[in-house]
Image (cartoon, rainbow over the protein chains, first blue to last red):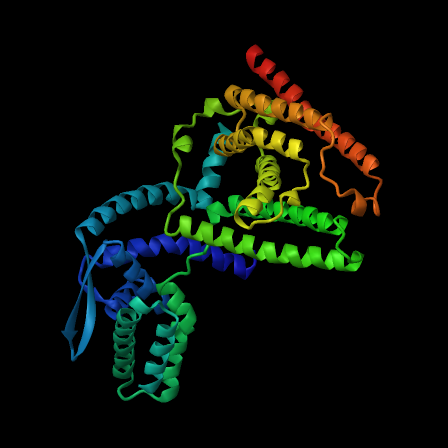
Length: 122
Length: 319
């Protein structure tokens, strides 16, 4: 597989997951940079050119509430999950859990091979 | 901070006017937060190069602006097949019409050679094609602006049982077949009604039509059948699968076309010829005979479709 193919697939895989990560992070109030730091601290690295437009799109869709406030001598736009966003997050979390549980065994090649061998021996 | 201002201004230039202020304000706040955090981490002011590195990592202003406001294509992707077929149909009709009008002008005595004929044909077609392309593109863009790909009522009601069996591939109606029919109908309507429209609105002479008066009269009476053909094609476009009703309508339309071609062929003379000028190029009686043969050959096409669709209807009855 070429590096371009890998990049494309990685991008596709991350796209939906990032929305979930952003929505989950915004259960607490954050401004742009603090949100990025929080995601980075949890191991999700996302560049600013992707994160800030994504947050705005989610806000435009009514999934986030936002307000401008003064903080540390500078105005910042704070975002928080809206009621609609919270509902959607709950549904997406259920979806993610189901997928993750189903994918877990599939992504463990050794276990899969052992199961196949056990079935063949019967 | 001059670099940051320049960067934000560059991003704003790529954004639509109503969003510039708001996005610029937010982007600036985010960049300043990031720079502050970096300066704090370093324990002093940032050098110009470090600032430039942060901005470079953000991405090119155009790319960042596109992330905030993605470009909406003029023609939505799900409409591209329809758009392309409409375009080809209209351009095809314009080309044939241009050939007809140029040939008529040449035969009516206009004094030009083959090179000027081709040049006139090309320039006339390009002029019409530019108009057609613009009109269709603007029409699609305006009609479907901001509309998402939605499932139409026919698609909602579909049932897997309605799909034709694998062996009955003929039941699928291809887009190119529908648009070929539509192009033929539109061409006929234009050829019949355009000279009349010219006479009425542009006060052109009464002999501007290529058809003789009684042929033209016959074609005018036949126009409702052509309109029915257009409606039948639009119905096919909506359904895309032959059913009994569609086949029956198609049989009726094609039968009417077969009869019209045969009637026209035996209703001489079909064309209105200026014998003095036309005789310089062709023998008028040979030309009328050629047209008669051409019309009889043309009658074979809808005639074949009548036979084909009657057989298909019989297959429906048996199944």
